[in-house]
Image (tube, rainbow, N blue to C red):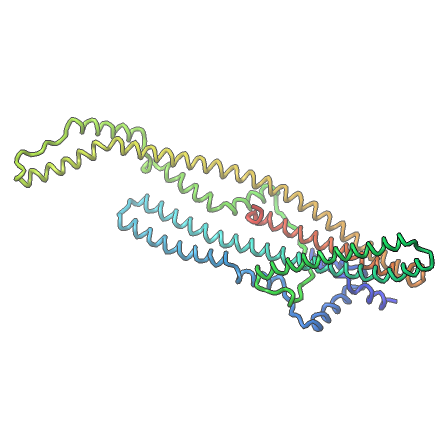
Amino acid sequence: MRKNVNKIVAFAIGISIISGSIVPAFASDNVESTNNTTANVQIQVNGKVLLTLDDAIKAAISNSNTLALDEKKISYQDKVNDINEKIDDAKDADSDHKDYDEDINDNTLSQLKQQRDFDEDKLVQKTTTAYNNIVTSQMKIDKASKILELKKKDISNAKLKKDLGIMTSIDFDSTELQIQSLQNQQNLSINTLRDAQDSFKVLTGKDVTKFTLEQDIKYEQLKIDGSIDEYLDNAIDKYLKYSSELLKLKKDYYDDKDNQVSEEDVKKAEDKTNEAITKKPSKPANTDDLGAYMKYVDDMNQYNTNISAYTTTLSLRLAYLNSKLGVYTQETALEETKKTYKESLKTIYTNLLATEDNINYLKSSIQINNRQLSTLKLKSDLGLMTKSDYDTQVANSQDLDIQLRTAIDSYNTLKEKIQKPWLAF
């Protein structure tokens, strides 16, 4: 009897859930070992190599134009920083200005490196989602194929019932129509899977139809030390680290008295200009006197500088005030961004907890379903229910496996977004 159970339920696809212990999620108590054997036979028969999720991620990284561009940006920015440093040296800029420029350049380079890491994390998540979607789609198609196969067998019995007058023509036609509907849905699912496989090939460069994919999925609960507010604040600070550092650099620079253009500076410049107006140099009468003429040229240059001192300082004051206002605006925007991010992440965390509850519910449902299938198997052996009805129940039990796998995939995605906010925004 046990052997028969294994044969019937072997197609139920299992999910290994890692959360301190391994909990099998199968349609029968004896499916775990049977399922592993079935998978191995499939690999040998089809001659397909196992493409793990890690392998797919590595392929996607190697295949990514975005990451390649990020590396070029980093390389070129490093060269640009060297040139900017040489420019400051050539201009003999003051030490404060040189330090500020160097800090800004270093921050720009750090942001580019951080963006490369962020883009890689996004690519990993995108590949993971695509990989799991294909596996889940294959599971759904596999389950639907078995249901469709059973329904097609039922149609023979239905035809016999109709011929015997036990079933009306309308009921028979309705049964045929149900099969047609199932077939249409199956065709749509297959075409959707093909589209997903094509997208996966663009993403990773791998033709997934030539590989066998992992059907196990890891489930590790998010562990938070301390309060959720503190955890989210730290995650957001990590995300916005270099934006915050850049803002602090600008704020410190413009708050430094040596870099300010004050009202007092404007007043001094105005006085200098007013004084210069009354002291315009006179052109020497004897232009043949080179020394006198050169002094006149120098005096005129100084005069023009003094005359324009007021307007020049006003322009510098205006630029300074605009820069200060820009810093205040950026500071406010950054704080508002942090608040918005935190609100969104709290919503994600709420969804994560709900998904965790759903996973626990599905695990319990699968355990109950396993016991129910054992009871149904006994009824089938005793002739209290048809084999077809039992096989249908076994096939339908795959829905719980699929739901659990989908829930775990959703949980893992939500967890990643909480741990890495750049995946969420």
